[in-house]
Amino acid sequence: MRKILTTLVVAILTIACSLATIPPDTLPIQPTATSGWIVEANVTQIPDTPLPVEPSPNPNDRCNNPYYPVVNGATWTYQIWLQQEAPTLETYSMSVLDDGTFTLTIQKAESVFAMDGACRDDGVILLDVPGVSATYADGSGSSTLSTTNDDGVTVPDDIQVGDEWSQTISVVASSEGAETLSATMEATYKALGYETVTVPAGTFYALKVEQNGSMTIHGSPPFDTHGFLWYAQGVGTVKSGLEGTYISELVSYSIP
Image (cartoon, rainbow, N blue to C red; front, side, top):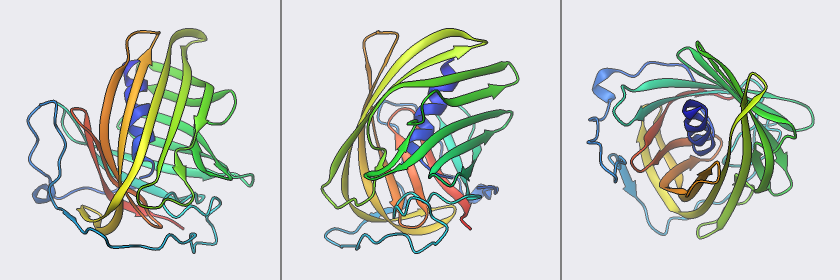
């Protein structure tokens, strides 16, 4: 069950992703496993540089959110570095219904993780669909996540520098019909400013967002997380990372 929770956290933070390989000379040096493990290379801060937030010009975008495209058939691929593991590729594919609900299917090696989301008046929210909100399957079996409570928003529609928002998600995980664990994740976000970010997919002018989170499993003492996300308008997340946990960089994307 550790896999489904790790995938859930990474998926919520990463937000979007498509298929490609990264030439060896573009891979960063594997960081040392420390509590402050997060790569800041190739990021140049541009202070006090405004970027008007405009609705998506894509007529196929169901949510019309500048930083989170919700387009049927869209795909993104990220290169993921988990501590003490070899880098892997994760491909996200989006399927959107007419009512604005959607499913992200995340393919990684032999595992598949599907997560539901929806367009709301205040922004895009993940795991807001009643009932089973996510499924995970690999060679050893499958599990499901059902959302029992979801407050807040994942990505607001109109983010300005200095804005803060939050999301709290409670889920129950089960395998073969039997409950295996319950968990609550709380996350707060703050839009810090804009930076030029270079990743394998290219160079993007992106909004940098700080994330602080806390997860409680089965009522145990919470463990905290801290990281950053970089959102590019019309593309989605181009880079993200949690200190001491993972780094994700966009490799390629296709948004019809």
